[in-house]
Image (tube, rainbow, N blue to C red; front, side):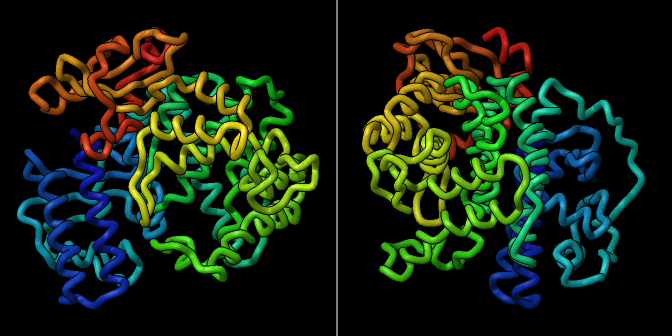
Amino acid sequence: MSERQVAALLTGLRKLSRQVGLYPEGHPLTEEAVVVAFGSISEFLEPDQEAALTVHQDAFFRNRVVVPHASLEFRGFLRDMQQRGVESITLARPISQEDLYDLAAFIGGTSDDLPADGTIRLNEPMAIDPDLDVTPTTKLRASYGATLDAMRFVSGAMVTRGSFELSTVVNAVEGLFEQSVAQPGAALLLSTVKSHDEYTFFHSVNVGILSLALGRLVGVDKDILVPAGVGAVLHDIGKVAVSPAVLNYPGRLDSEQWREITIHPQEGALSILSAGGVGSEIAATVALEHHARYDGTGYPVVTRDGKPHIYSRLVQVVDTYDAITSRRSYRRAESPRRALQVLMGGAGTAWDPQLVHAFIGMMGIYPPGSVVLTATGETAVVVRPSEEAGAPLACLVVKGRDGELIDDPEPMRVELDQVAKQVMASDAGIDPAALLEAVGEAMVVEA
């Protein structure tokens, strides 16, 4: 319950803090955001009269309970709170609208007025035991978060001064590599975490995780795979040079808009080469070629035998997979299985056929994060790939036959012929990556 409560609260506060920075108090859009935030506070407090949201060691806690997934999904907002010196927010019924508005304005940096009515109190002492945040996947989550932070740093540096230090990303990817090796199944499930609000950052880290996994599968040595992973994480850094209006344009792009899009691989490669350092050539090659198709089309045109480098082709496959399974402003997400079908359909033209087959073999026909409805009526999430073709799916049951969410998801093996259908996670009201802690290392290893 804590994950859903905290996610609802953070969604409401984040939206309101942005709206109060754009529109004055009383504006219809601000008032709408206030209503949403009030609703999220009610869910956060349920069933208590008073509860606290605390930031401790880069994680959110609801009272003394860590909420690991929300800590990743809302890491940008967590950083906003830290920047403003907000270590805890204590909420007490009945919440004052004036307090709520002042809180949002303070976190958003548009006001220094603190909540004054006493229904929202900041930075009250609360003892948090550091061991509460120690789980089998703590280090994996930390490496994911560190890579998100590296991406924010690089993006900010590119905007402010047009350059960045590559070592920041290299260190983050090395950590991601080590943790992915230690917990490969958990890493694949974690790569399903999404954020519509910060799509580019989360997409970049997910492409990094999947590229490292696929590279290890096909035998790429660490000395080469880490620089390729850096290229995977930075493959879209050139989009800093593209206007947001073009990036998020909902319709068909005109010729000028398309020209602006097609320069981002070159811009990204040049920025990586300018950063320099060991492995920068490999990383820059990946960024340059991630839209150059296997059959010699795409952009930019590759003169080396008409095909992109093997490391670029590897990133192309996983980049497409994560993009298809992510919601964008101009289209809805597709299911993991549908993404695999798209890859198979383009094997040999858009994508390297051998790498496509290797990727499908790694992920299984129902990749981690797939949500399936069983023949007996349960809703289950696939939490790790099948070890061999035709093997039962290792799942967690998240909804019973009555359609109600289960507070403590239960492990279950689902035979392939018992899968009634696959459903979209968003339609089922489920975030697969939020189950990472429920899976635990024992489930990842033994299932």
